[in-house]
Length: 206
Ligand code: MN
Image 1 (spheres, rainbow, N blue to C red):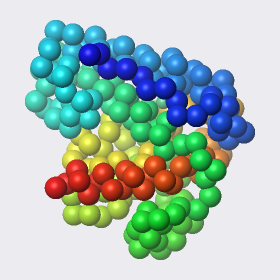
Image 2 (tube, protein in one colour; image 1 turned 90 degrees about the vertical axis):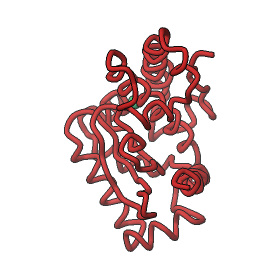
Image 3 (cartoon, protein in one colour; image 1 turned 45 degrees about the vertical axis):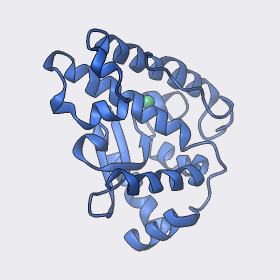
Image 4 (spheres, helix red, strand yellow; image 1 turned 60 degrees about the vertical axis):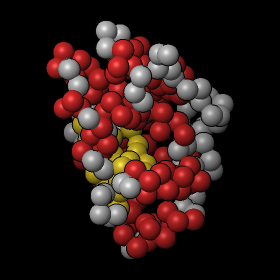
């Protein structure tokens, strides 16, 4: 079965006014769809690869055939990144709850200090890419950024949450004001989903 774009778990206008409806249509229906189409094209002649989850594909980039490695890195990454992105948004934002709240306080001192560092990672990513909160093999929470559609899984870290800083994620509403988009994004983070991913991180390293 070919890879598919999962439907948004909420309405296209659910993230207004922070993320506008036209951006959500373009981002989900066009950009994410394009990554999935290209990923399907790349695995067409490799039935063994097509059976793997997209996460498995990008975890072992060096094991992939050279002729499709780059395409899978970019488009498998694009698929995994955006699938997470839709899931971790949609709620009313606010302060983190549950285990992630405690872990953020422990690792960064406070939610405000964490937000500042995460936003700085997003602003500092030159060109297109992502800002991440990852869990490392040693159980540490760390803020990172990657270019393009590279995912922390490819370097053995688990993405607990990430924000898309490609211009397609914000340009219609925020134009060149990436810092404003990064600040507004906290209003739409679904901390319940982030907590679920934090739990998955534990299983990932077992
Ligand atoms: Mn995107």
